Image (cartoon, rainbow, N blue to C red):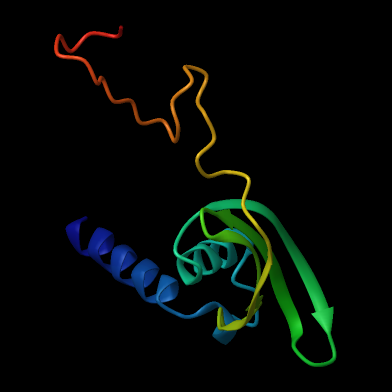
Length: 117
């Protein structure tokens, strides 16, 4: 019983270790989003679209919004290689007052008694 469990585990790990491009498939939108997010230093994913072009073939176009701006990142669909990064605008997400009137979710109590007033 243990041997069959171990054999199944080893087989499943070896299949999972094969890169997506070796199997002929795409990396997927979630993986492309994670790659794009890491490339621009984090942020919020606004949109992921699978696109095709003569120049790049199949690629994911990922829109990322962070404190430094809005970015369009193109990620090759089979390898995960970043093809291009383009800043498309300024971010609306940074330093927005929260519903309590504090910026960026940070609150500082400036008086001596450490309460909310």
